[in-house]
Image (cartoon, rainbow, N blue to C red):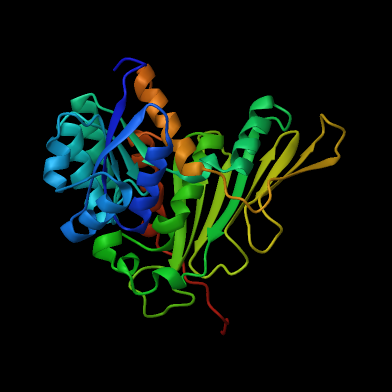
Amino acid sequence: MSKNEIIKVGQIGAGSFGIKRAESVKQCKGVELLAIADVNNAIAEKAGQALGVVASSVENLIANKEINIVTIATPNENHSELACAALQAGKHVLCEKPVARNADEALQILKASKLSGYKVKVGSNHRYFSSVLKARRIVDSGSIGKVVSFNGRIGHNGERIKGSWFWDKEKSGGGAILDNGCHLLDIARWFMGDFVRGSGLTSNAYWKEAPVEDTATGIFATEDGRVATINASWRLLSGYFHFELNGEKGYVTVDGRFDTHGGDRVFVRSIKDGGEIQSFDFGHVRPESYKLELEEFFESIRNGESPSPSAEDGYKIMKMVEAIYSTKAIEIPSHVSF
C-alpha cells in the first residue's frame, strides 16, 4: 500500500461501541469508511443510515475487494472467527480487546496473521489516554530509571453490563479481567516487557449470582524478577483506573479516576530532578483515544510496520488471563484448633 493511497475500512459490529469505533474511523484523514455490518442486519441498516455508509452483511463486507482493513467491535465470541476470516480474505484487522475469549482462540488469530501476511492490532485505547502517553514519555526519558514494579487497578460499578452478554461466559469468555482488566495487562506489558510467570485469584465479591467473576487479581513476573500486580473489578465505585510505575530512580503515578478525583492526572517523583513531586493535570476531558489508536494503526500499515499491540501481544495477554483463571488458591483456615 502506498503512503498516499486512501485506506478503505469495513466495520463489523454496529452496537453502541461499534458506532463509536466507526465514527472515529470517519474522523481519520486519508481513510474512508466503506461499509458497516452486524450479525443483526436490522442493526446494521440503522447504523448505516446514521453514519451515511453502506450497510452490508458480514460475509459481503469481508469479501469486498475494495476494503483494506476490517475493524471488529462485536461480542468476544465472534472475535476469533471474524478476525481469521478477514485475514484469510486479505485484510488487515483491528480487533477490539480482548482479542479472543481465551488463549487458544487468540493463537488461531496469530497463526492466521502469520500465514496470510496480514497484520492485526488489538484495540487497547487506554494506551492513548493523555495521562498514559505522558507516563510513557517520562519513562522513555530515563528520569525514573528502569521500571521495577507496576501496581494497577481498574473498574467501574458494573451496573451497565449487569445481566448482559458480559455475564454470559459462552459469549464473553470471562468477567472483569476480560472486560476491563485487559487494558492494564496491556499497559503493564507496554512498560515492562514480557512476563514469564503469573498467577491470580478470581471471586464474586458482590454479584454471587453472576456466572463470571466480578473481581480478579493477577500477579506477574518478568524473567529478571520485576513484578506487576493488577486488580480488575465490576464494583469499583471510586473511579475508573489507576496505576503506579516504580523505577530505580523514582516513580510515576497515573490517576485516571475522572469523576471522583479531579480528572486525569500524572504525578512524578525523580531523584534526578531533586526528589520533588511534579503533577500534570489533564482535566475531565477524555482524549480522542480511539482516533489516536486508529491513526497509529493506519500509519503502521502504510509504512509496512508491525502494529502494537499485535496479534502476538494479544495472545500473550490471553495467556496472562489464563494464568489468573487456572491458579488454584490455597485455603487459609479462619481459626486453628488442636
